[in-house]
Picture (cartoon, rainbow, N blue to C red):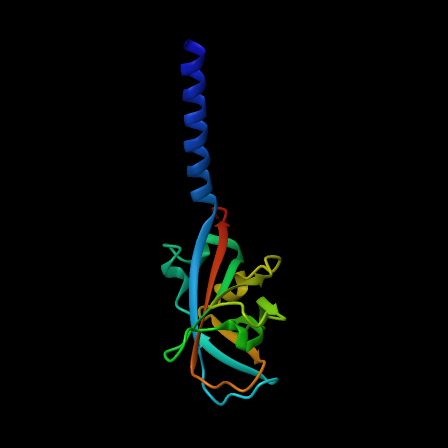
Length: 173
């Protein structure tokens, strides 16, 4: 009985401490951008739309100097349409680039060869190998969504790109 209680205590302490360490070490930041695909946009031609991001400092509390090793962890595209159900099958490809003040543009997520009957939600392939510290800490993050339609758009479609970023705490200086 003594061993059972001791084992339960060790398991509970380990579980709680792992969760605490995980929340301290891993910081997840959401970001969403919207793109309007207007009816009449031609197919088989890359179209780009750029939008500004909100300040990442609002998500990480004390600011971006407190985090490092910022990477995209996931990206998702969702289509909505006022006249019909949104359908991502109209897209041939979707690519998401990020840039900042005085930084180059980096491809962070994409999906090519999108199926015709995919539905209205699609997970994009994030490039988790790229460290985005310079972009995120630049003060102004911009997202550029480049897409190719299979055919000319017949309805207005709102494309929402939702991204999540992970980071770790910066060492004390």
